[in-house]
Length: 310
Image (cartoon, rainbow, N blue to C red; front, side):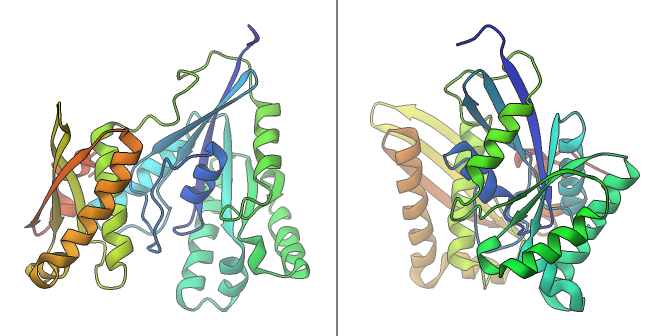
């Protein structure tokens, strides 16, 4: 290892469901952020860490930036912009088909384009440059991609442009190599073998929340969160107790399922992944509680790694 180490903090921003968590996982080469079909899956800033040569890249996977309504939403958007502050590089991830289809200003694609345009305006106001990363390129023909890049490049805030498919891995190596090349001199922020800064308790809650939304992404809205209440290491393994908070009685029944089968399936999937991640048997106990208005409570926001915001 060279004595001349380099380190770069890289903020990854974009509209909800642009593929930020998938990109960070691909850049790190390991799963450090959960990925589901639901937009706004990422709620707090999660750092993914990769060492390559004498450089360390610290990726900040931020929540999607959108028009906030609840305190939870406002805290998520604030966390995203705070991730940009102090970063050595900023990646603006654009959902390529979402941007093209959003020209009609209708439906989910229209909202995705509007959210991305709002982020671009925020970068312009802050006089901040960014690296444009166009994602999901496998979903569009080359001529449409060229049109998209030309349209966005005219804005004048992008130093470089990369075309990637975070899901398939296309273009990831080139983007990573560029970030390593431009990383400024400086000491590493984390040990060489560390892949993320997320705590074990929060990681366990995130894994269960992923399984919850993967199982119920159509039935359950965003009025659900998971907290790790207890973590005990014993000779028999790790005993973890968690609570799923929902906002209404009807949602509790959805999570439980008939005779508790849905919750049982969620717990099984979470337990298996946690066991593999932790390298030890996991004994997972999950409870479901109704807590109306949890998304407005400062204590709940702190539990999921967000700062309280007025």
